[in-house]
Length: 440
Image (cartoon, rainbow, N blue to C red; front, top):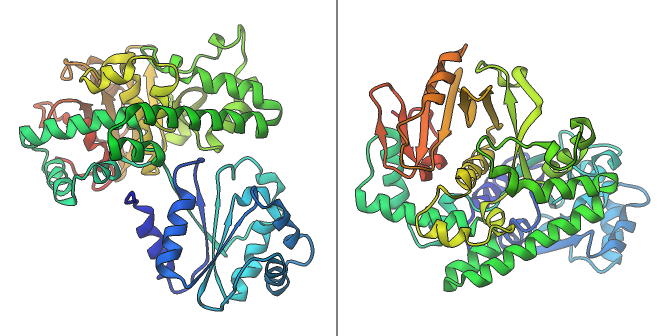
């Protein structure tokens, strides 16, 4: 079984004194249902699972009065249970398909007899259908594909190695050369495999990449099916945008150009389609900022953006023939570095860091800008050999109007602190960026 950080988050929730319902959000097939079932087996005598997509008849339990006793009685009459007070976890899966169940959470939590976890893959899509949100009775957690640390665990690399890497990051000193090469090799595997649990399991159990690719394509097909089923009026535009992500990331500056999809396309026309993809959790928006100045949100230019895939393994599987062997062979420059940049974007998103980039007419570019400790950190992702050549980064930093805490270059090379204060980190250390903000 894959070790996931969400298990610790679930334990923290269960041990809280005033336990609310826990809503776990995330794209399809990132492992939400599996981890909740495993947690229930280890921590509860009774587990009741209601999937509103597989069991649409269960919605009828919420059609009448929403008091807790009526709902539990209705569910019991439908064959769910047993419901044992103080010993039962009730799991509402795909709760977006039953908005009334989301509304009823307030009354179920107030009742206090059972614990509740909700989960959903398209929660942002049908939010208008929820008549009343359970504010004050629900806490939320986001779940993503495996991050690189979780992938290391899956590859049998223990926490003592991660601790050594973390020490090198915090002290801004090189990692042992052998260890660095080994971890970079695993990182390239991660770029190709990605973090979708089924794909990782297939790869780690037998190194069968053909099976991994088959699983990835199946996941992509399921996402396209969701677009066709749930995207309503935006389905054609959303599918166009989704399928165009690899080609758009193949550009030098990676910005999503709508004119490539449709001549004279207006940003307003595609706005809802872009929002659908990000709310479904299968893509990340990275907005342009007009100035390197906090707060970044005040400087957003939302008509200019990059669109990254949820997962690099899925990105590689999207028609990029031959890219997997190139990456595994050490060529991370392929695709104009778009795959490595996507990997960094996905890791930042997993750390709840809002994604922003800066571009001043091609002269001064920053792949990522984020706020930390009252100032800003800036990142340039370099997939090639000349990682210390970064005129664009230097120009952009000169344009900065606020305090720059750190200037970071991420590449395939080992850790080093430049004479000009630039911190050079290997790409795999992206997983530590939020932990301290010290780094040097």
